[in-house]
Amino acid sequence: MGLCLPCLGDGPQEPPDVEDRRLKLAEAAERRQRESSSRGILNVHSVEEKKKRKEKMEKQLSAGGSPQGGLRWTVS
Picture 1 (spheres, rainbow, N blue to C red):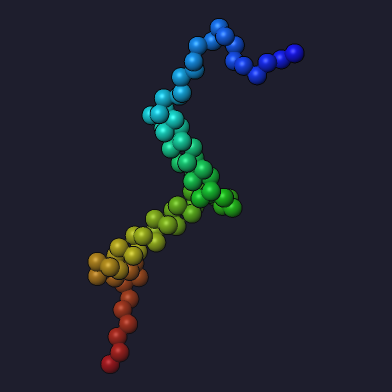
Picture 2 (cartoon, rainbow, N blue to C red):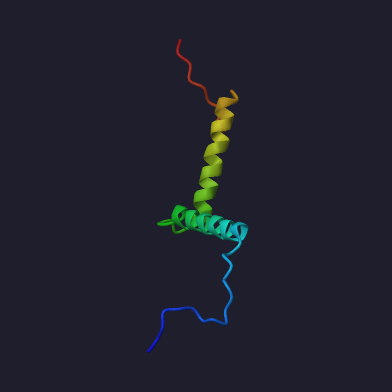
């Protein structure tokens, strides 16, 4: 018959270090976030490039510079 008691030869087991556990949980959360952000995207690199170009255009427009075309609309 088996008993539900721990072996008498083993001492009390220490819980894992809190900092190690916290680090592992943070790494797992970052990995899940990266995986979920790229879900459904076939070419992640092209999406990142488009995002960078869009941010660059927004910066140019907010700084008062004209877009690459250099055309302005005037009404007289």
